[in-house]
Length: 435
Ligand code: CTP
Image 1: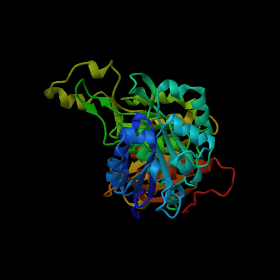
Image 2: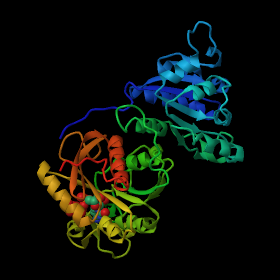
Image 3: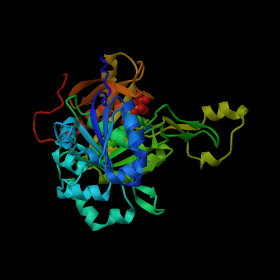
Image 4: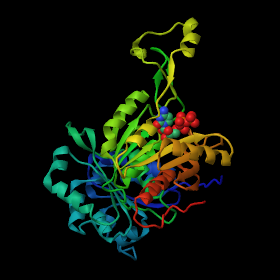
């Protein structure tokens, strides 16, 4: 298998524009993360933002001077600054976007450096809105927010619930800097040419499973596996950033918590709990992606094992050798019950030579009844469980396609492209088959 090295933000030109919301105090963390990811970052602050966050901190972290309102019509510049910045940026991150800046943007006002840049730019804009809950719920703000989403290239990042600086609880917090960084990375993960902001999953509902399931041996001990849940969570978040409504059913995860923002999350432990949620949700979705690593064995049901005490060490060998059953195949059950037009993507972590992986993968795809199966070898260095990268083969009905090792977010986009391609009316599938 070929290995493709790529860090999506490396060398990319990002303009971080900060407007007057208290969430601006978190923007330096975002700038620092973007610079560490290899991006070239410029910062711009509105006059209100400059009162909340230090332009010096932003300049230091971005390794470049931070622009403010007074720089706009500087007679020492040969070109207007707002045109220069708009032409320079490959992506603009509004972090945070305040009610005032939203209003100016939605009305097409050129009042101020930020407003002028937003009128002059032709690149995608990632908008992380933040304000007090009552302000956010005001019809005028909602109308402006709806309006800017009709502008080309706008990717919205919704306000998050929580305790606000005004001591109220509700929606209004800016998306976490880690999520904003993930969203920026996601836009640059759909090809090498530049950011892609197409909301092509808009109006579609996706159900994703992620992480391991956990089966109790007794009250103290567990059976589980090495899955971190990263592949499933990134797939869920990539789809959401492409406009999908996404429900995520997950076991214990080892991913940054902000990566779960704006997903409808259903945490579970056992395969039985996962199965129950999947059955409740199945009828409401257009596609299902089973990225969870479901545990293979569980105690034969004799009451709640997890509260039935801890087995003595001397009894453990017997406890482990007796009274177990195979966990039913959740994917197979979903495929058997699926409504017409629902698509199912499965995953298979396998070991062995390429030809053997493809043969076993195809047998598994047919047995489980899924439309697509992503097969990835887990016995090769630098990919798979617990790694940032993954690669393998995507198997469909009568075709297979190699997906070279790449970042899990890039892979997630390729899998979403393949699912969409199955729903496109054109006979020319965008997934070119190797065979
Ligand atoms: N899967 C499932 N329910 C199970 C086991 C697996 O839904 N009890 C799903 C996984 O989420 C994944 C796919 O089936 O999408 C393949 O997982 P894998 O572990 O390869 O399947 P097994 O059937 O357990 O494979 P094997 O017999 O090779 O161990």
